[in-house]
Length: 157
Image 1 (cartoon, one colour):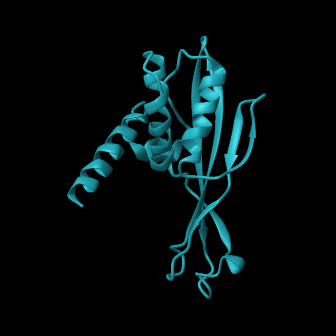
Image 2: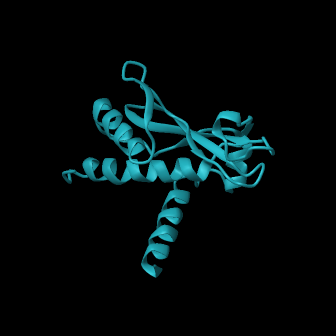
C-alpha cells in the first residue's frame, strides 16, 4: 500500500513537471490552453501510434484521424451518490508539428452531473461543462512520454 502511494506521488510529480511552462497549475486551468508534451524528434507516425497507445491505457477511443493528427476518447463516467459530485472526462488530442519536431497536445474535458434527484442514474444525468482536468492530461502525457522518450534515445519499446 505504501509502495503504491509512493508510485502515485512520483507519477503526479512527474506529470506536473510537464506543465512547468505556466508558473502554477491554476494559471494553466485559467488559461484554457491544452497541456503539451515536449517536442519529439521522431517520425510523425511513431508519435501518432504511441500517443494513441498511451491514451488507450485509460480511455477507449471514440475517433481518430491520422491525416489531421486528431483523436478523441469516449466519455469516462464516474457517478457519485452525492449530487454535484459525479463527473465524466474525455481526452481530446492532436499531434502538432513545430520546427521539425512533433508535440502532443491534450485536453481532458470535464462535465459534472448537476442532477440532484438521481445522481447515480447516467441516463438522467444533467451534464454541465467544468474546467479541463490539466492534471489528468499531464498524467496521460507522462505515459506517452515514457515510451516516446525512450524511443528518441534509441531504447526499444
